Image (cartoon, rainbow, N blue to C red; front, side, top):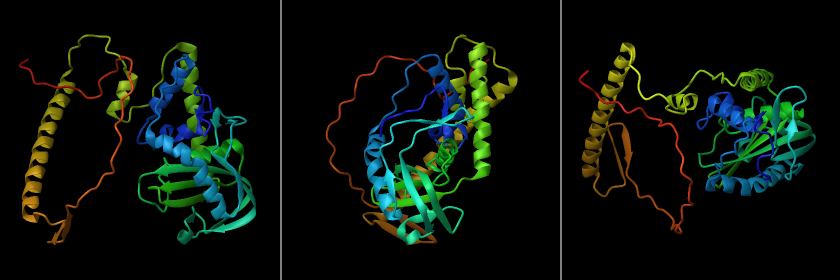
Length: 317
């Protein structure tokens, strides 16, 4: 893994799941902000964690094993970015598989899944994308775990097949083979074009043309600072605030009832690991953890961000 090779000022294939609204971790507005930060010369935020480091270390191992299973040769030492000839879209590749016309059949027993077809012919070079995950093995990978990224990579490189090679829970490798999917590629092209237009608007006017927010957290990006001390709350928003307060109270009541019910069930189960009856199976097993070395948390510079959650208190006004 050579690290990020693409330019943050341009949309890249790895960022497409967020742009297309299928990522659990980032929104289209966060991707827009990332590119705007790059345009403004701000340093890219380091989001590396231990899981990502393991993924990077295991990447060539996963791809070599995938190539062996497919019966092909490959290059897992790619150190250059690729750019689409006409669209503002870039990508980097974990690896390239060298197809020679082999026909690969859908064979779940061998961990080979040809998506949307019974078989695929590996004509010429193909994109190899490695993923590691803690989730249980799937018959179709989550859209955010490779498929959309792979379609973008095929668009950029012009390759006619691709493989998302997912290593599940450190024990199971599954290879998902894809051909170019025109409907997905058309949607990517439109999304990338719209994204680039928003960046040009910012460069021309300094104004940010945000996407419609898809979460409360998105609003934190759209209004990152509290520049005004206080406003008068409109009546319709006051009504919404009341609803939030009441709903939070209901959540607390429900959580308290769940807690009381669990106490009752646990008192009946005692030292039993499982209880069965009335159409339910309830497990209360042991969970074991490996010993962990002491970790020192690195120092962080002071910084301020907009609070994500609203704090609402009833007043007498």
